[in-house]
Image (cartoon, rainbow, N blue to C red; front, side):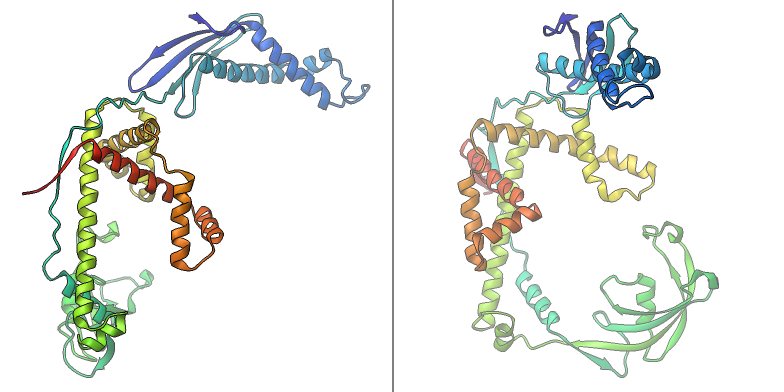
Length: 424
């Protein structure tokens, strides 16, 4: 073991895989003795025993009554201080908590223990440019503008009750469904439902059955739950249900004309609306293409600068991703964790590399840049700058804004180092 600081610590460092470090620490007995004296004084200052004034109880009496507790506290504090000093003198940077094991101590003998932890990795930035990245084609799906206009028409639809006819996709219906082979204790033997057909609000078998009915008509049907149904107890189950159609409502859409265009926004006519929608779609497509360029470029940069990342960082990242999957069965959760591991490891490596590049090349968003963006938001919304800043800070959006500005500077820097080409 190599000596530590003037305190007399001896520290041996063993390097493991994936940034794991194990410290074997030996501290002289005086290390614990000092903590014992401090702990005894603390007890003496607090204790009030018969025959002694508070704070005047002799150390020998304190030690006789509380010796075991004092020794445990002294060893715990000595381990903590020795561990901190050992890590500091060896200039190590733990990623997370330090796991202390194999603590051994006898009065008058050295205190020994092991400390196991992951350290922050050394992140190389050897190659940041010289890549050739193809920009994907900017394509707006055919008919996309018309589909958005149809959606806008649907949002302004007036629902009218139909007195006859069978339901079709897009119709709103009210039905009563009664389970014929269920138990009354189920609590859902007979219930009324409001549905819009064709939007996946009911099982396919149920929608097909409703389409066969007329107003006030009813029928008995076999309904099969799909194998991927969220309720595992009903996956693949088959039930007999009675369905009664109480009402059917059909949407009456406004005409797609100039008046409709003016009703949905500041548009001169339908052609103006269609043109603006097309421009928005093209702008969105260009934004997606540029985002894909950034993704491809960053993957090339990460792959060109390999380094190991701590297992604890990968696990913590995966935990965040799986935060909403806590209700899954343990076996399914573990399988999903293994499936996500490569992506989690890449994401950790990417984040560490981005942070290093931003720091090394002074690419972090400045306070002036953040302030200018906040002022722009305030002008757009007609609000005081201070109010906007306070709201962003309270919601956590201020950090998000700073990261977004930093990312923009970083990708401008990386793009300057490489060649971005369009697909011919």
